[in-house]
Image (cartoon, rainbow, N blue to C red; front, side, top):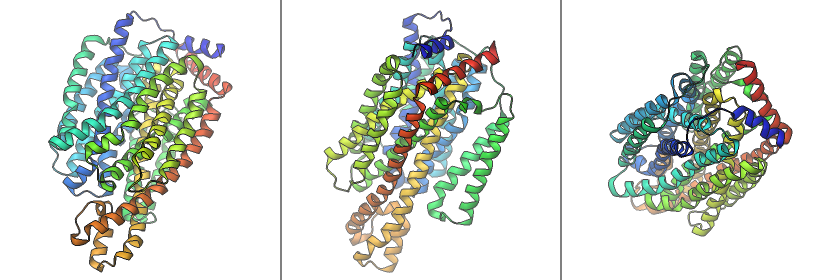
Length: 529
């Protein structure tokens, strides 16, 4: 462990004239900016049923409302990190806040799903500038290993705080003033972030910033966009439909082309060579897995709480508070533990906790007791809150400080890839099995052919739309069908938790961790010595 500490300190040893008070003010500013980004997503989750009613949206439309933001965020994160290193981290942060405010304003006045999705794309452009830039600023502000671990723990805990506040704030706003107000809340938060960033954050750039890789940027947008499109549209078009198969095939080809192009770039958008060591590759894989679980769970569980259990937006927000609070509590604790004992125990313990949570969710029914759900939510929150700081720190600490923007962007991109795939994959799986089970479960009701076809065609809308005198029976059957479909999604989550455990076990060996840090040191020596 002494060798690991020595290598970390060598990589992190940058002089800093900032006082401790100013360092912590900068940390607060970064956390406020990040808070706005995460608050937007968590508020949106509780608004999905309201948006479904407002725009008569189907499952695919709801997924696009969420993933239009996540896709843009994912595709532009690395570019934003490079721009921050080249043009100034404070400048990119402030620009991101301005664009985020503009996008949120557009969301608040949207008149249909297409307009809302476009406004979410604009918001995603701003959000892409916030995540890697704030982490890069934190990484370059706190140079001591222990201080950095604690700062990253706090930075990671912002997600839990935003998650805890989002459903509650969103529920109050939606139930009192309507869904449009959930986007307007970003404006004052963003303005405060801009004012304080200009006043307190010193401008910083990398001594030798990276070149902009336009080829790689275009290819990653095309690959991820087409892949997510194919996944989301598959339930409606058919998983074996020619267009769906073509979409998946071209996605694979684009991914292989992306790897080929990046391997031949002097300064690629995506540093494939960083993945040559086990630890860095492993924690990025864990980031993808954990955020697939988190984003997929929030998307599906929100529909369950409001559409199946009949809760209001505020009620659904209160139901998820145990999950969010446990994330907010465990993240800083995990960061402090990490600074002393390293990441192994946190990574290894968090996987069984998540697996236990999804195992409990397998038995969820429309009338499952509240206490039972709370226990499952708390276990999942403890797991995600514990693992997230360890992922961030292990990924970023092994990279040279001069490339903090790129390194943090890669780690953040892995998270957002997981989020986009979580909504797309788990949402599509649930939608597919809902359609399959709904037909057979409706048979005992002996509905007319026309009515049954209408119910089956509405899909998720069958949970809440009116069907005349048969509405209550159809809602009951649709709710049971949805929980049946959720079980398939939860089984996938359990399998991912098993993979999580295996990857964590391989990633956290002493040799893997030391190799990761040495790899970062070697890259630093090669490029900047």
